[in-house]
Length: 216
Image 1 (spheres, rainbow, N blue to C red):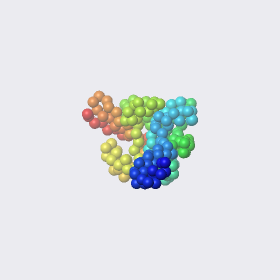
Image 2 (cartoon, rainbow, N blue to C red):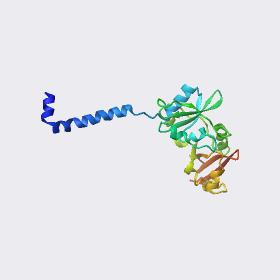
Image 3 (cartoon, rainbow, N blue to C red):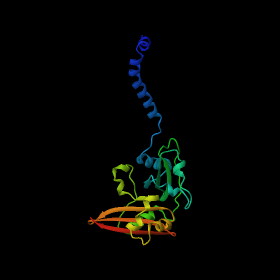
Image 4 (cartoon, rainbow, N blue to C red):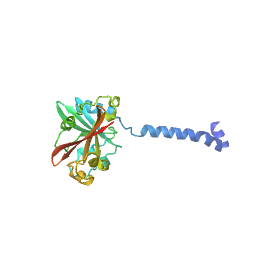
């Protein structure tokens, strides 16, 4: 009966069944599309699969730390996932570094390298020398705290302008070239009516910091 109706009213049937078919195909594609995990999931993986007692820091722009200084940054292009979380965890009192692809079902997380001469903990200590009072401990519910509350990094073109803002004494190009690893850590906090911003870099094997204070 349905077949007879379709044969007799092809145009009408096409108008009725085409949207239904499109919806079915759409649902199938959504079901088959790899789903990216959130930061909370990456933290859980670091603790469950790698034995981290806690997570000190997490970022999605930090693949540069998994490369030797001077080498080409290719990991972000060879990963099939859209991006990857770089996790600094603590296990048995020591730092551990982990790459967790945004789709860990497609690509397995793995232990990463940290090509700076100083640990993340030492970088935090450098910020705290300026009164930052930063505590390196990311909660399981990452989104319960403002992302601005964490140390951020600048890589590539985002480093431009920092030399001028922090009055490091050289221009942007010279500043960029002076970095042992082309990355700048930055932390911003408010204290006594002022906005404090501070950067930490590694230059010529030394950890250096610069601060800028702006009145609100």
